[in-house]
Image (cartoon, rainbow, N blue to C red):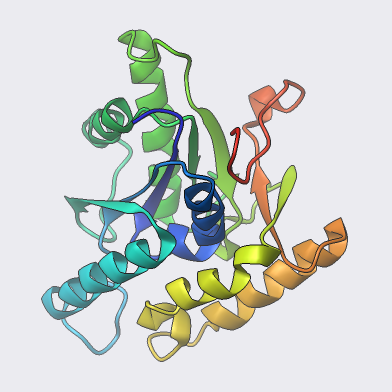
Length: 231
């Protein structure tokens, strides 16, 4: 595989909610798309034990990936205990080496969720390891950060992608997750992310939009357009 999209999230669901629409656009453009979840997110249910909820989350991830036209990779780190370490970074780097994506999307570091911030550092370190080891023979992947309500500190909407054509399919895929539909926690995930697509769309002159941030170090450098077909 080369030239595809890799979405790296701390938990099952993180990238589905924030970039599942981008996955659909790339998949429909004929590109390879892979979701990499570093944990299952098994610790987030107030009424189910971790083993039961993990099995549910893995099933949800598989169903959602199928709807998004994507491959699925899930690492076995524990929810809530993801650390910023070279071990985690090497695990991510191994997937990047195997997938050889043109674009990687992950969390922004300005998060109040430790797992999210540590996922950010794992991806940054993985890309650095790839460069150090000469693995990026055709150039390093372009990196973007997805807009997540938990990662909002310092997030900047550098690029808004028109997701109007895949909105309904994204919503159906995200609703594979009980967390998104409601009933797990009090936060209204579906209401928030659905409204966010309206807000970003209104601000960009399209019906539905999704915002992504570029790494600050390349803010003034040319970067490809997101959305599939030439990323």
